[in-house]
Length: 94
Image (cartoon, rainbow, N blue to C red; front, top):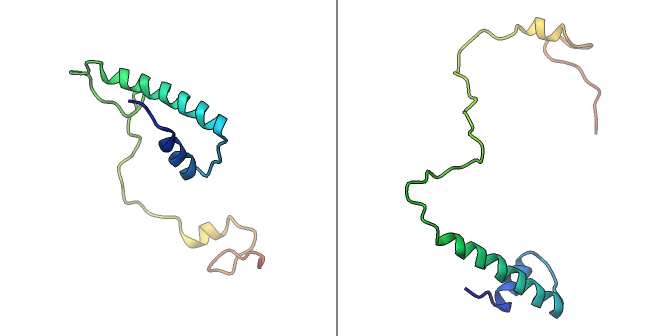
């Protein structure tokens, strides 16, 4: 598969890049080389190979949801320097 200069220009436009004629030629050549390697990977037989989402095995770290008692308001407010019996009082910032 040969990538065209028009395709490179379209991608450059989407990336908000301005390429000179020399840069366009160079980029077309580089992208064509990269795509030829990707096409070579398509030739591999991957039957029986499990698809993966991470290079390293990942285990889900979620815990069970359990209902428990929450901290009482008075206890929580006791941890702050200034409160009005309902919430923490902080300086007004505009």
